[in-house]
Image (cartoon, rainbow, N blue to C red; front, side, top):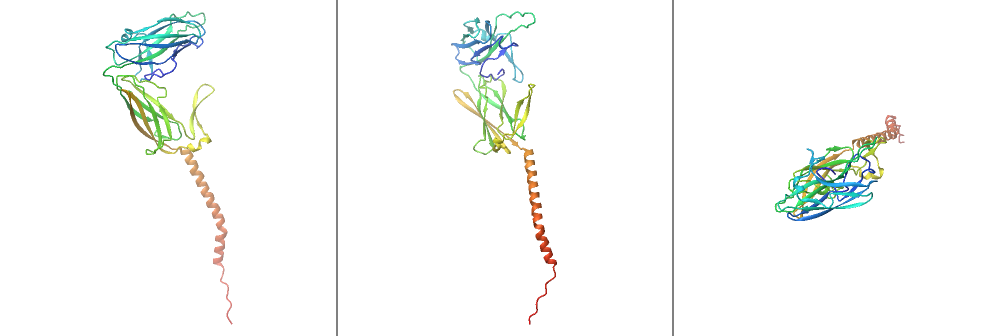
Length: 344
């Protein structure tokens, strides 16, 4: 994930070319470590050429900036000045054949006066921009591996706060319900939150109906930055699902999976957040709650209408059945009294 929260996985390729022209696999990504000041540390990147041709590559540290809403990262062409003094590579330039793996050793010679944390990108790109042939375009691919370094020194503070826990609507007709957790790193080290959102009926139910994972991408949050993580509860009947059209567009479609009839959601629910981050070797919990309603009014209206129609039908049947009885009683009351025989 190219944002303040940097997710683990294969490094992204920044190129406008097809994978057959330029394709690199880099692991690990991001590159995360904790080191002590005044020490030398070696890290290793494994780089694989998944393209069809031989690649002449180079690796360089690069700065990056974040957008104001912390949702986008922009790589710069400059090298972080503090990083340039104490980072080196076993092969700043190298050649790699198709299908071949290259092990790049990165040496961090941390000074004694190093700060608390550093975040930069290691950009792997072609040494030379290939020349475009007639009728084709120039391909200049690159891979960015975000590198996060915590310095274990006195004064290190790990602190994370929840600046907001909300649900996208206070009343839903059908699921899914989307929750947003706004984390802010108020410490001076890089943190990684994790935890769960527990869905309960009301606010006092002991057993949760569902448990949603917080920060499924295992991302990190940089000091002094804020980031919103979302989670979705879609385990209901019926529920909206995102479907893809033949033209590539998507739409929300209400799916009636009758096997999930027991998961019809009606009433008041509470989402309880229990997040955790590591501070000084122990986990620190953060909790918050938000409430919402699920009112499937079309279903309820249909049930109410069907119930009224059933009651009306029962009333009419009962009325029709009672009509002969009432006619007999009425005629009995109107009949003249029969004369009684006199005693002799």
